[in-house]
Image: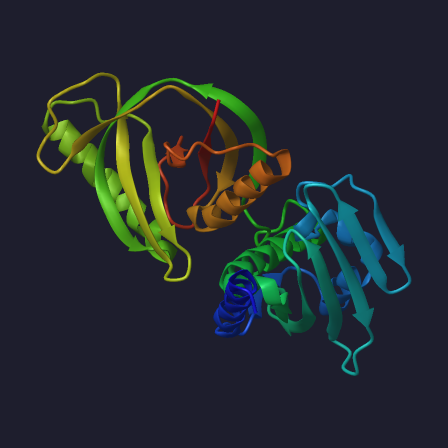
Length: 329
């Protein structure tokens, strides 16, 4: 065997051993209560012709053409994705089983199980997915799993909106407005570092912002600026976020101890306006990043994404937040 062939064979062997360390399994689950009877919710999910209104994988292509052939739903949308849903009749009445086969943006397939349970106020809907990614993507199974979990959550929220209308108290109290690319001026802010669980950021943010405003006020500085969070690093596997929590200032000033000045240069950013409770912001960020992929826009790696809270956040309460993803010019 020539040295070149030996090197190629060794490289293939190493790759196979490396990929073999990963199972490629994908497990995701989401649940929520929908204010509608179980039979009505199940009928809506079972009607593949009505998936277009709430299908989480077509959030950025609501007008796309899909194909419904009996118990099979399929779509193939450039820059969005390609997939097929095949439905099976289950033995139990308040369940559904579907097979999902994705070609893009990730190649994976598996079983989708639905359970509909009558509870006070409506139906508790549980959506589970079990499957595997393609062998070549095994190392990225955790990423696919995290994305699928967000897709299921978002899909249930959209499904609830189609069944409940806009007056129900349990309807997801958030809206997403993809406003497009906007020029952002240079901004100055006083900020503090934060590192902690991603899942508790919504509850941690209000008292920290309030304390920042008090510190600025005691120092005789304007304390009524827009609150902002600069996302430096998010570890989805560990659910840890490193960020900077700050208050925008009109001009440079001597800051009290514990606060640092940060001047953000002028730039272009894709902006998504979110209106709702801070607990749903992770879904909004996910959809904003999906929008960049669909529109083939290139984020600027030198500038981290950030959120501007036009109304100070409060857990469980509706607020308006602009999510900014800086772009390369």
